[in-house]
Image (cartoon, rainbow, N blue to C red; front, side):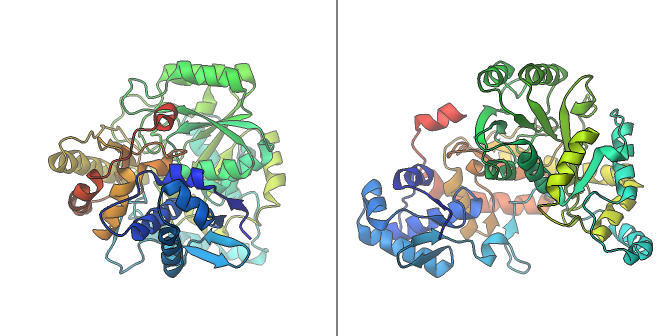
Length: 475
C-alpha cells in the first residue's frame, strides 16, 4: 500500500493547465507522468479516486480512467483492487536518457570525468592492496581522504583537523544524515527556493516542517535578507540549509554582507546553518572569492562537500565538515543508515586531491565554454528570454517569460531533449517561468538543445498556466 496519497484538489494544483490539442486522457496521463519523473509527485503515492479527480478536473470519469490506464501501460502507475492506483517510477524513469537512446539529457548539470581520472584510478588500485586485508566497511572515511579534505579546507581559510570530517556516500546522503541527526519530526527547517531538489526530499523525509525564503536572479544581492531575517525570527528553525556559492540553480553567490547578516540572524535564534558548498570552487571569473562560511568567527556552521561536482558524478563520495562532537553524533546515526563509503572510490578522490588545482582549472575552462555557448545561442533563438550572467557554478536559471516550463519540458521530450521543469527546484508548483540550463554542455549540445526547445515552444506557449496567487506568494 502506498505510504502517501494526494487528494484531487492537491493534484489539480500540481497539474496546472494540463490540456492540449490532443485527446484529454493522453494529456492528463502525460502531465502526471512528468510530475512523477520530475519528483514533484512521489513514486508510490496513491492517486485520487477516478470519480473525485474527474469532478475536480471537470471531465468525465471515462477520461480519468483512460489516463490511469495509459499510465499503467507506461509503467508509471499500478492498480490493486481495494488499494486504488499508485504512482510508479519504472527503470526507464530513473534513467531517462539510457546510452544509445539518442536523447540529449539536460536534467544533469554535471561534467564528464577529468583528463587525469585514469591516472587517479590507476594510483588508487595500487594503493588498495593493504586495505584488502580489512573488512572494507568504513563508516568514517579513510584517513588519507579525511586528511586531504581537511588540508583543502585549511588552505581555503578554515583550519580543519581530519577528526572534523566524516566521509559519506555523496552530498545527498550528507544532507539526509544531518537531517536525521538534528531534526525532530515537526521541527521547522529553513530552505532557500529555488534550490537543489534532493535537499527538499531528504529534509522532508525527516519529518521537518519546511519554511522558505527566495533566491532571485533578478535582485541585486540574490538573497532578500530582510525577509530572511524576518522568517528566522518568526519561525526559529532548528537548521537552515543554504548554498552560499554558485547556488543551484540560480548561480548566485552571497556577498560578504549577506553572509554576515545570515550568520548573525541564525545565531540569534540558535539555528544551525547547513552550508552546502558542493559547487563553491567552480569559480569561472568571480571578482571576489570567500573562505568557507564556517570560517567566520563564532559561527555554528556544518559544511557539506562532494567530489561529484568538481571531480566526477561517478565518484559517489561526499563529506561533512563540523565540530568533533557533531561528527561523533552524525557517525552514531550513520551506522543505522549504511555500512560506509566505497573504499576504492575514496582512494580515487584522495588521488585527485593531490592535483586538485589542475582538476579545477580544467573544470573552470569547460564551464566557461558552456556559459559562452548558452549566452550566445539561447538569446539568438529566444530574444524574449532572460539569460543571467553567472560567474561560476553549474547552471544558469533562465527566465522564459511565460509560465509554461512544465509544458515546454514535456514537449521537448518529444523533440529529443530531456530537461527538468522549473518547478522541480521549488515547492507547490512555483517557478513555471524558469528553466535550468546546465553550463556543463558543449557548444554542439547547447545548439541541439535550443533547436529542440524552439520546435517545442509553439505548442507549449499556446497553453500557459494561469497566474494563481500561490505562485506569487511562494516566489
